[in-house]
Length: 83
Image (cartoon, rainbow, N blue to C red):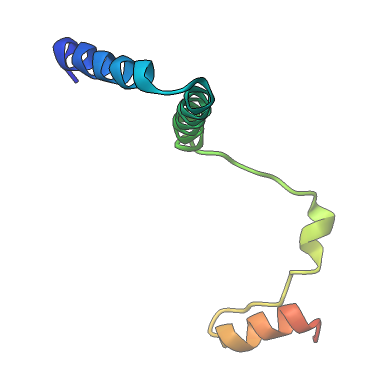
């Protein structure tokens, strides 16, 4: 966004804020903080995040799914605890 447009938008926001009662200004501030935080989160989550788990948590999954198996049957077995 170009600087002139940015300044016009800021002035428009300030103009609206000047007409609001204080309790509404607090709502606008909370919303602005929410939007700012959401933007920061989106930047952080856009990076690749690799999570790891202990091997003990994966041992129970070994052999549940095999090549050429039935995915539905395999997933039902996973959640039903059947071997």
